[in-house]
Structure formats: C-alpha cells, structure tokens
Length: 417
Image (cartoon, rainbow, N blue to C red):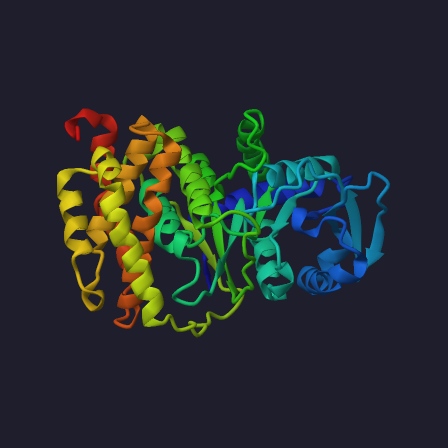
C-alpha cells in the first residue's frame, strides 16, 4: 500500500507531458555509483548489476550505470543488459561511507548531459539491496510523482544509533520531515531535485568541503518538494574506513547543525509536516540484535563518568544548570538503573545546536565533548531495549520541546552560563 499527498497527481501529469515531448532523451534513468566502486572490474560488479537489471525491468534498456574510473581511457560496455559508462570522480575520499557533495554533483552533471528524468545514487554494498527496493525508488520518481525517494532500512535495535538518537528525531522536529533515514545511503531524485541538491553541494565544494554532507530530506522540505520513503528491508551497512567514533559523530552532527543554521528562516515558522509518500516495496522485517554484554555496557557508562569529571567545565559553558544537575545525577546511578531521560537528551542536543551556532567554544572541542554524552545515551538505550523503549517517543520529545530551541535561537541571552 502507499499513500500519496495532495497535488501529486497534477504534478505527475505535467512531468509525463514534458517527458513525452522530449523524445531526444534516450537515457531515462541514471544510476550513479560512488567512489566505493572506483576501478572495480566487471566481475566484481556482477552481483550489483544483476540486482539492477532485475530492479529496472523494462527500463533497463533506457538506463545507464555511471561507474567511477580514475583512468580517463576507461571504456563503456554492456553487461546484464545494462549500459555502463565511466566518469571521473572529483575526489577519492570515502571515509564516511555515505553520499557526499561530490556524489550529488556527479549525478546531476550526468543527468543533465543525457537529459535524464530520474537519477539514482547507491551507496557501498548496494548489492545487498533487494531489487524490489531499487524498483520502488525508481517507481516513486518515474510513476508516482515524487521528487526524492529515500530508502528506509530494517535495522536491529542496536544499529544506526547516530541516526536514531540525533539525525532522525532532530530532522523530524526541526524540518517537519518524518523520513526515517534523512541521510540514507540510497536514494532516487527527479531532475529538479537533483539540480537543487547539486546547488547545495556546490556551496560545499566552493569552500573546499568536497566531502561535505548534503541533507536531501531538509532540501525537500524547504523546497516543498514531494518526498517518498521506500521500504528497503534489511541492507548490509558499510563501515566507515577512516576515523574513530568521535570523528564520525563530529562530522555528521556538525553538518546537520550547519544545515539547521542555514535554514533557520524556514524552520522557525510553524508549518505542517511534509507529506510523505509511503511505498511498501519490501515487507518489513525485524532482524535479531546481537546481544551486548554487561561488560560493554559498564564500559560505556564508565567512560561517561570519567568524562563528567574531565569535561564538566566545558559542558558548563554550553548547558544550563538544570541539565548539568541531570548529568550529575546520571553519573551517580548504578549500572542497572542507568537511564538518560528523553527530555534531558533533547535539551542536550538543542543546547549543542545553539552553542555550535554561537561558537560558544571552539567547534571541534564542542563536538568532541558530545561523544561521551552520546555514549551515555547508547548505554541507556541498550539497557532500556529489554523494556521495549520506543524511538518514536524520543522523536515526539524533540517535537514537543522545539519551542525551547526557537526561543533560545531568537533570544540566546536569555540563558548565559
């Protein structure tokens, strides 16, 4: 089943008329493979190409697979009934294993060159996607009138915790977008969405941030574009190849905080939630979680307790007294009672967003001090998991406390540590 927002039908009819008039466009769908596939021989791409051939079906004959190649003389070839075309990526950096500014620029340039109607970005390990998931994303753009289709993965309760604790609930509260993975590895875009993402990406590259992150859910919200969420089932998630947890958390959260700052004039106004076109491409599954031993949980909590002693001075420059009191109480709880309340976590994140904007302290020091707080949340989440705690309740807590963020954003001097 799927639910279409109002106005999609008329938009789709207009696009179909434009597409029918443009008979010169031989390539309807462009699939752009990121730097993870650079110089990959044909045989190593075979599993992914088989998946793509099955997913695209009749559209395979009007599709092109753009693969990254450092050799300017790399060839085009046919495999699994698909046309493969090389392109030269502008960077080889791939530490975060996710789509970055250069990915969106590459996709748009290729789509524009071929006057393509739909562009698809696939992340590393995309061969683990089910064909139905890819088909659903392409269908959302080509047949259902969406501007961007973002994959929704089925994860274990202990996977994707940066997304669960910060990215999803913060995006949902600030931008009124309920897409579960606002920074999904896999997504499809219409021509105008690809152009908008390329424009946003250009702002990163002009400042030297070739690997800067761009947020498709937030861009769709600010442009009032139609967003679809496609169930993708279980996917093999790639692991970052460089940097520790602090580096990864710093990079991702800082990028989202910057995007929130850039779009402040949009999200401070009361707006309805962006309609979401839900496409059930793959039946929802509940993967079993790998158990986390008590020693691992104890290590997370002990790390937070040590940080409380070492970072209290920094936190006092960022967090109000009531929050600091909550952290003091948390640091004294025994392991079996260790619980970081949703309301406390929401205030921590909102105050870090504000401190990042105001440059209360050096941003690298600020974001580094977030890591032990995040690990405290992780420990609390794992402990509460046995009691069936809901991440949706955390998102609702972010939404309920959004007036605090708006108020502090407009009048930051109301709280001066």
